[in-house]
Image (cartoon, rainbow, N blue to C red; front, side, top):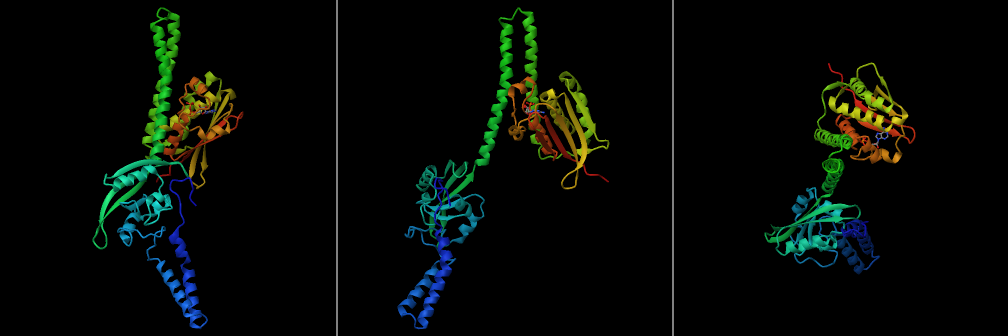
Amino acid sequence: MSDPRSRFPGGPPLRERLLAARGVLVAAGLLLLGFAAFNLLSVFYALLGLAVIAAAAVVGPGASVPPRTGRAPENPGPGIGSPWIETLIGKLPDPVIVLDRDGRVVAFNAQASAMAPALGRGEAVSLALRVPEVVDAIRQAGAGAGAQRVEFSERVPVDRWLAAHVAPLELADASGVIRRLLLMTFHDLTPLRRVEEMRADFVANASHELRTPLASLSGFIDTLQGPARDDPQARERFLVIMKAQAHRMARLIDDLLSLSRVELNAHVRPETPVELAAIVRQVADALQMLARERGVTIALAVCAEPLLVLADRDELTRVFENLVENALKYGASGKRVDVSVERAQAADGAGEAIVRVRDYGPGIAAEHLPRLTERFYRIDVGQSRAEGGTGLGLSLVKHVLNRHRGRLGIESRLGEGATFTVRLPLAPHRG
Ligand code: ADP
């Protein structure tokens, strides 16, 4: 059943119902004839039986179906009885409807029927497509205004955007008579629109993130040129803040560039064998200073055997830097961060490396977990900014891991810290 609010209403499938009844009609006809043969019925009823058989035959698979209005179309066009049109449009992936110049349906494919279930051959297309923009385009194309293109949106049953294209067409029918038709095609613009929306959101977010430190910088420049011109103490204080803001802008630009580089290479799988434990050890060492500043101890547990993965060393370094740095920044109150590297077996039996970064900080509420890897998603924007965060770290982690055929798992409960788990397939043995 189609939704009555839809602009593509459904209708009773006349042809299907008649086809379904065909068997019953034939059986009834034969039964009546049988009665007549045994003199159980008059000749009148026998003729009635024959009429019923004839009616059933008319509804047979090869026969044309009369229009639902009961009025035969004056100019049925080449679609009816011209199976090649049906075959041709049946092969096309988008909905296609062939109309005569008065807007009556000549032929349509299965995709068109799925989109507008009430379509019926010989009937006005406006009965099945209640979209004023489209009806208007058909009228104009039919009146000789040339090809028309309109975009429209549907709210029911789901939000979607479509483009309809109506082009005049002249075709010779079976008897060589030229028929003037309209070829109407539809194209689903929904995926394109969604990508456009995402890109617009991304640009808006990135601009907003850059504008804040930029506004602060120009504010301080004004102050230094004006009221604080002769105040060396204020100048020193302001320069420290300005340096931090410039650093924040540089970090954001770095993250944006890294993200776009990883996305650009998303389908190129890294092929260099890299020893994973060495990278994790290096990252932990490099972050010792930050750990000391925060009063946090990093406890490192690395398995003894070398774990080779096919990877881009710099990208994996960024992954573990982001995870350990987050644990030190957001989980500092727990005073301890555990980092472990171990070998395991994936569900399919292949070897995999598992790196876990666990902190004992405030933890993360369940509702945030699925959204943490979205770009610019932060639980507490103020805290993230104060920590020099950009909101892009975990998004970058996810993209890098996708490229390496790896996975990121996040487990946490409020008050119980958080565990970030990275799984990467081990490089196949060579030789
Ligand atoms: P940011 O640059 O803000 O750190 P991320 O993408 O790395 O961006 O992290 C997104 C958000 O996830 C952070 O702002 C923080 O709110 C939350 N988060 C990340 N790691 C942790 C953690 N270990 N404990 C608690 N919250 C975390």
